[in-house]
Length: 122
Image 1: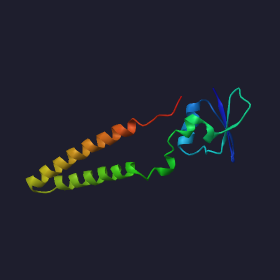
Image 2 (image 1 turned 60 degrees about the vertical axis):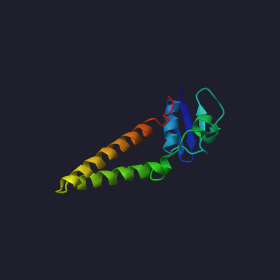
Image 3 (image 1 turned 135 degrees about the vertical axis):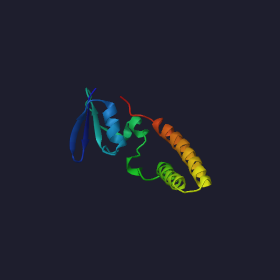
Image 4 (image 1 turned 90 degrees about the horizontal axis):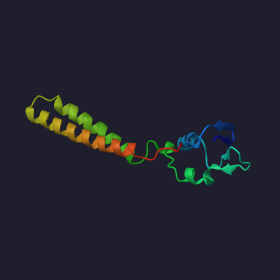
C-alpha cells in the first residue's frame, strides 16, 4: 500500500508504511507533516498515527544518552588495553589482556541490546 507525505517543502510518495516509518525515525517526517494512505481521501497528521507516535525518534539524539557513553567506554577500554599490551612487563601485558577481554564482552552485550531495538514496520 502506498503513502503520500506532504511536508512544507513538498510531497513525496512511499511504497510502504515501513518506508514512512524509517523516514519518521530519521527525522525527515515531522509530527505536523500530513500523510495520505492509498485509497483514502483524508490527510492525517503524522504525529496522530499510533505506530509513528510510539516509534522511537532517536535521529536528533545520536550523540546523547547512554549509547554514546557506552561507545566511549569501549573506545577508552580498547585504547587502554592496547597501551598495556604494548608495555614491556609481563604484568602489564596480562592486565592489558584482561582489560581487552572485559572490553570485548561489554561491547558484545551493548551491540546485542542495540540490535534488539524495535525495527520499522513493513
